[in-house]
Length: 458
Image (cartoon, rainbow, N blue to C red; front, side, top):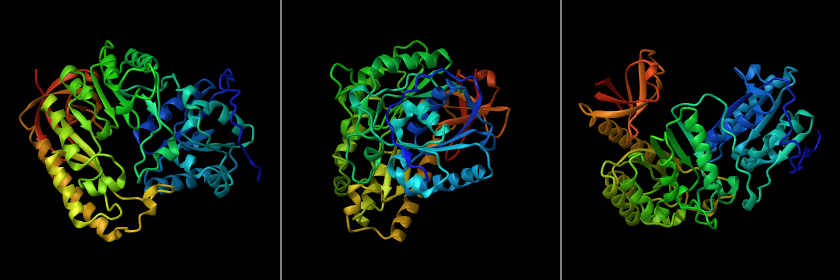
């Protein structure tokens, strides 16, 4: 077996396209950041003549952009990789690569475990995907898991050449400097670096020119944007700058850390109508004792103070969150505090999971694990309550006229279109695709757990 090429120089990043059309198949797992990174890889590879394959059977290059935040995501990646490797064993001249957080976490182990894997690179390899793929095509087994210099980090300016919807993600930072004991992100994505605001605004303008009207700013902790970069603007000022771009109708952002939610961001909810009335604000636990063990650096009481301030600025604010149950040492009282937090913070939805031990995280050293059966029972109870709350929230809209930004046709009926309210309620109603991109008044006729049905009003 040839040793992996660990070279970190990228001499072919700006090489001209060979003119030979090749096809790439992306399989993306995990968060919005991975979806965004896939778009950036597509943009760069298009300069070398790559176009999207119709499926993996049609591809010259298969790239799996992976997530390692939970063990189940890693298992899904391994299953998919097994299927793609069988295509290569049929004798096709196919290059297969694993990118993203699993690649950063596993590195050489992935290459050792899969002899027919050609390319492994972490999130910091995304800006240099062209040269990495070129070396793999030349026959090298390529491994690149080196973190790039933060002071000169090469954020990719190219916009995804694929079809753009009404909304688009725009990254504002990479990495994370928080040390939550359950989280592998600082290990897989490295230290935090803020993207220059002029690059962010250039990308926003380019997206608006292609028909995008809803911008979602993404980062591991958007509230800390710019704070560690001398001369850079703050996150609140960035929100104002994005709102000032002609054509931007709505602004969303994720993910936000409660500890760093400043008064200036709270005030932005008073000042910026384009800033939507939905906020995803991860709480993780309703118990101050568990939050302390997680190293979240806020208490239950502080989280509720932040929520109160936000709702004072925007009374119709809709909150969703992240919750982990079964964290080591979580007692029945701790879990009950989380259930109470769901009510007190008035969450209408949540991404909720059992604690998943991740390699290299400090929580692995905590000895008082919660039995799996107990954690599963707690998760079932939590998710049942969240479903009830989501349904009740949706039904509260029945009879109301809401403003919907139409995103596209329904997946189930070509005579129906769908879109979201500012508060993130997905509404389906009769209409055609000429409405896509428009703000439409819709009367909600029926609320469901994850969406609503309505009818257009003049």
